[in-house]
Image 1 (tube, rainbow, N blue to C red):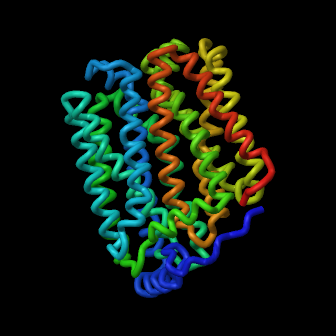
Image 2 (tube, rainbow, N blue to C red):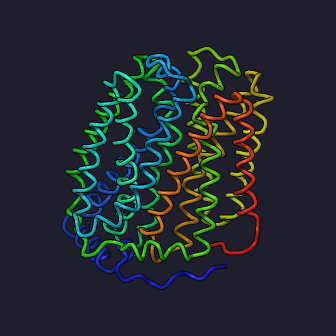
Length: 410
């Protein structure tokens, strides 16, 4: 059991200034207005994470249209992931006193432009350039939105507001891919990016209307940010995040080739199968959300074991359509709880410095996405899909040990 770090009086997440902001906002605009601001932040995280996930369900048609290999298509996940990992802590440190509403709206405007550029990209280099912009938006929006709950609602409602905001991440992680695949199936992969450009613009207008002015007197300093790395429980949580998320995306980036090439499903089945995965993921998110608050270690252990079983069995049972469909549902159920369980770990490990710890968590999470997509692409091109799935399964052994060992836990 680790001790919490000393209270950081400048922490934007739990500062008295935030409590005053929330109280003033509620007094002027009422509780419904406060929760529309929370909804706007949740929709912003949904937009950026859905944009990040889109290439997973569209990988084969994108590769065919632009004339690149499936493994090279993994760069569409690597590029924004690595940029998001860099931008998340930089935005938190560099934002200083800039109004958080302006930052969030500016990033949503950039996201709409990046999605439009992706829809119009004539070649792979142009598409990768657009994904660079996406990466900056992901890190910035996720890090800024994650610290807004305490600025929008009274202290008693901060937990629920945080769950709503990060619920946008969870829902996008499990539904973004099937929605993109469905739109791509009906109207082409470029239409999927065009639809996300329109949605991002709509959320921008909603956020500009729903969010109050959110100035801050002081942002997190680089010293405070780096100081969180001395928190042993947080370090263990970041270690678990790195290997768990990297192993998942090493395989999940290529879930469409797994379903079509390995299991032999027709193209028409991909959208419904990925939607079923998304529904299972939503169920996993709600199950893990309730369980993690009571038994965090047991919840994470169940998640890791579910992913380990899925990735280990797919090369063998995945050649059969019923086996592949069943394992896909187990995959969705297991991964659906990852975001909420890991965020619970981070918030419990750094109760008095949530914004700083969350920015590190967002950075490591997206770094893991990038590394997983890159390693998966190299493995698929070198040894094929079954070998890549087994390597991804092996990545789950590290978080399994880290969760199971006694020591520094929240």
